[in-house]
Amino acid sequence: MAKLSKDWLFEDHIDLEYKSYVLLAYLQDISRAFEVQQLYPHLADLVEHYNTLINIRAEHERLENQFPKELKAIKPNFQLEYEKMGRPETLEEIIEIIEYAIPVMEKRLKEGRALYEELAKTIHVSSVGLLPLQTDEGYLLMMNGNEPETQVYNFNITLFSDPRGKYRAIHTSFLADYRRSISNTPEQIKLELIRVNRHLPNPATLTVESEITLPFHETLFPIAKRAVVKFLAETG
Image 1 (cartoon, helix red, strand yellow):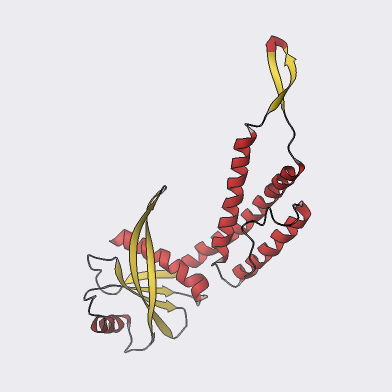
Image 2 (cartoon, one colour):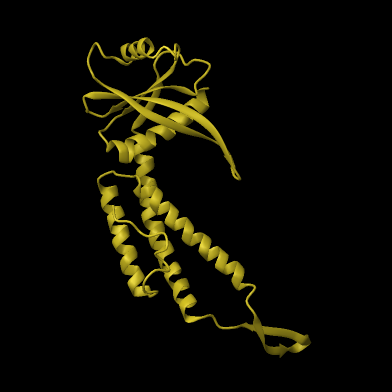
């Protein structure tokens, strides 16, 4: 994955033509990833860069309103007309780059979010048997399209807070692969997990099944974890 430095806006030559070349090369790499259904870390990285530019622009607009002004004219009824004092050339160039970059990034961001929504519809979460009262720890049985194995993960969910509110975070660790067969149904795998891991006698056990085969770590797993958190929040 081609990386775009966090400080790309201020590094090297602060020149619109040069920065547009750097940005388009990065976005081209993002497009190639989306074409092969690889969402992460590309989508999250793009969101971070986009939000950074939005925040810089908003802060600049706030500060610009505080820039010194000089009296330009006195109109009838003693209305004073002011003119903002000029900005340094480098700052002007940075603002031009930001105004160019935001809509270009936004276009690619919409493509990524649309792809996410499309692929999320192909991923289904269900409970193996009844859910216990405690659903903050258990197992995920991952079935990726036509792949012959069921990948099993332990999961636990924690709560965290930030200024925007309270959220659930899911943490996972890989346990084992099971070859799909008549003897390795989700129900049989759950029984085996209970037998081996006695500290979870009645675990929340969920299947996560994708209708199509997806890049596992780049797409299926990130979408699946969010889907699991939502499923448990709605059913718990």
